[in-house]
Image (tube, rainbow, N blue to C red):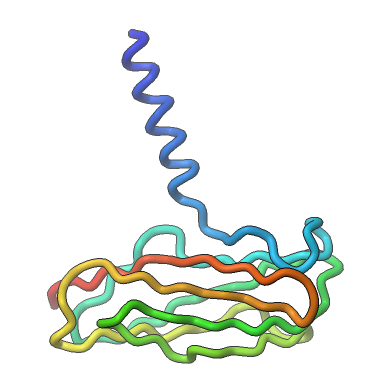
Length: 135
């Protein structure tokens, strides 16, 4: 019985900490004057030869009113567009990225990194996985 409880608790902790969907805080370090980057929680699947839209969001604190520059990089084998985005304080915090895999892209998992740099304060970054599958 103790073994079963230990296994269940270990799996629960793995799910909780393994499914983190946002970055560490950037900008100011308090919740109200900082921001985080929210990306897809689980790996995103894309078929060879296709393009898919992915939403990346800035989760702004109540008093965070700055422009944030996003830089997006993908592993070799897939492409992402746009790679540089300036999100103004007055704009929507949602950014649409187009992820594309060619017909010749090898099957497997690819990493997409997102770095956010505010005008003032600390930058932050996070990443998510894109899995290329057969058509």
